[in-house]
Amino acid sequence: MIAVVQFGGSNCDRDAVRALEDLGFEAERVWHEDSIPEETTGIMLPGGFSYGDYLRGGAMAARSPIMESVREAVEAGTPVLGVCNGAQVGCESALTPGAFTTNASARFQCEHVYLRVENADTPWTQAYDEGEVIELPIAHGEGRFEINDEGYEKLESEDRILFRYCDEDGNVTEEANPNGSRGNVAGILGESESVAVLMPHPERAALPTLGNTDGRGVLAGFEGY
Image 1 (cartoon, rainbow, N blue to C red):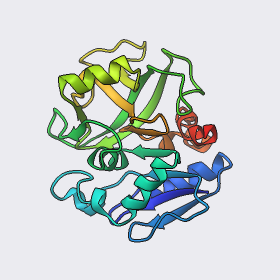
Image 2 (tube, rainbow, N blue to C red; image 1 turned 180 degrees about the vertical axis):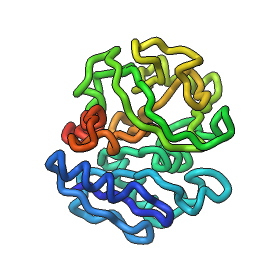
Image 3 (tube, helix red, strand yellow; image 1 turned 90 degrees about the vertical axis):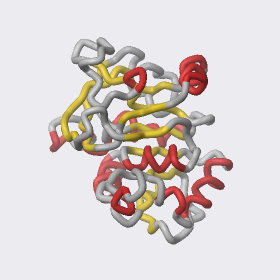
Image 4 (tube, one colour; image 1 turned 45 degrees about the horizontal axis):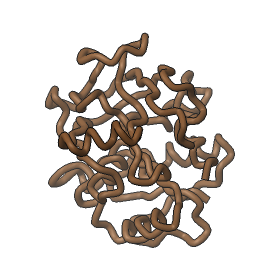
């Protein structure tokens, strides 16, 4: 069973459950004041505005009671996927390095973007080819990924960058970077490849009725563990 953690202010938890179930997974929303159920085989930290993004996106949710059991699950090898606000929670919880901060535009952005697959050799990306371009929606005001030089070099050297923002032809350019993220980074791995975070929303591009299924491959990554 995949536990979709519901924080106060989450607004993509139902979308995540529906998308996961459409892929054949059993998924269940779990309240942030509870613990991760014993039968959990995967964890998703969904998008939204946990605690109204008070202080900064994900900062307070990272201190919710459930995050202790999330960390214990990670140590036991349970896969964790953080999306948008969930990505911010992942970074604030030190499950992944770096931080997500205010967009370069200083405004909330809701649009479709193109991503280039940088590493297709992970469960989260094995449905794609390296260099493949996919289209996913974004909806965030604090999606700009920042990390110091040492951390960025480590991500690159260890091949832990999953996606970069690009144009329709796969060119990674400043113009194709919607939020000013360092190196056009849109998604990364934690110290373990079982933990991944990304700002774009794969669950919003997973149902055939929505006209775009490019995100199904990301969610299917739970099958790889």
